[in-house]
Amino acid sequence: MLSEPRSGRLAAWGNALLAGLVSPDDAVLAMVGDDAVHRVEGLPGESGPVGLTLAMGRLRSLGVTGLRVALPAPGHPLGLSGPPEFNARALEAEEAVVAFGAPYGLVPEVYEAGPDGDVHVEVVWHCLPVREAPPADVPSLGEAERELAEALREATEVLSRLDVAGSGPVAEAALDAYRARAERGRELLAPGYPPRAVRVLELAQRVGLLISLAYENGHGGAVSASEMAARGQALRPVERTARRAQVAAFNSYVEERGGGR
View 1: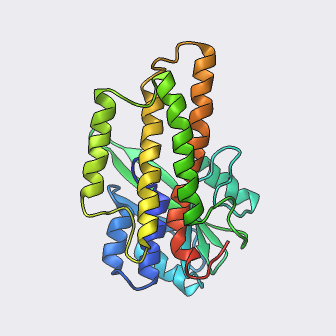
View 2: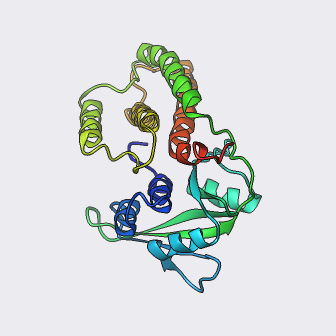
View 3: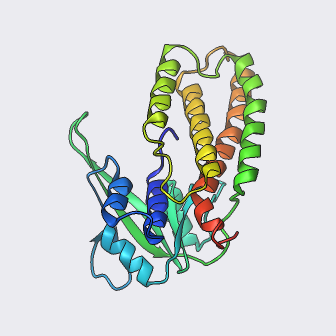
């Protein structure tokens, strides 16, 4: 979770666009990010895939007033509301955007081509019907911030004891890159989001990075099976809490404007 998921970029800048806080060109540029192009297919009233500008206009005409994020994982339908068909597609993609105001959702399908170092990425968002219901297991910003701080404190003791908290030159380089990115224009969220949402998202993504480093750097000092199991037990709930906090941050725009859970 070092960078925003594609669903996060689409929802955040889509919300800013729907609110008239940014221009369509600026919104689409932020939504696409480093990818080559994004298209949306399956929109009611459209016979084929369309660009993001037309797609956002179509969604607005269908009654969409806000966009939420879902980041589901096996056994944890975070941010989803059904039906099962949509949930299954979102779980496979590990993310989705769920509209507020009209029963539609978007699930990304990513296509990559080209050699290493010059990969061309195209994304097709599949528009599918969703159930209009509160999203699953999404906390408020305040709850997310408290839970994240508590989970991080509990896990740090275990990870430090097992020597897997993410240390050494590789971890430091990754953290330095993260800090540099965070300082470049504060690009975590689009205009219109409360400062607390930016703070929660930044902390959630930093925790996600540390978790990734702990997994990628091997077992560290956790040489026994019991110690490796303890490491996994320490990381899993923190990763879950970080995902919940990330979704809470992206969804705060809708929640604070009457789209309560």
